[in-house]
Length: 142
Image 1 (tube, helix red, strand yellow):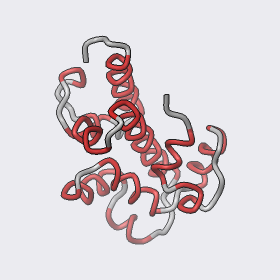
Image 2: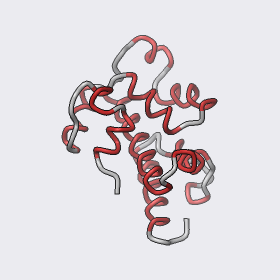
Image 3: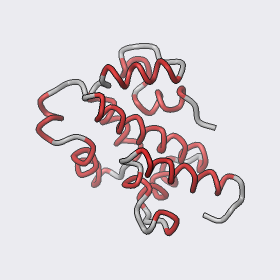
Image 4: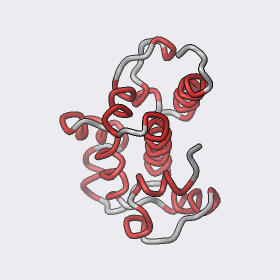
């Protein structure tokens, strides 16, 4: 499955985060102290088609806040980490970044027609997406 290592990679790794993150506690501390703005850019590069990146970025963090600060707030950092986690999980399952993106951006009936990437903007929505993916991994209908 997907652990902190895979999520950190999507967020930019040690160089991108400016610190070593090996455990969930380390990742939680990084999120709580505010991720670098570049982490959001890295997540978007993995999760979103090029034409959708700016729109998704503006849903995660208001444009003015993004431009004003080099670090994300803890709330925006949590959303960024959540998107990285869902993206890492989709990439693990499909073993292909393009196929993972297709899943993330296609409306899904199990999510009431929402796109998984949009559902993952909230914690409960991300849990729903994780359940859909896990059902698929275990051969259940998705």
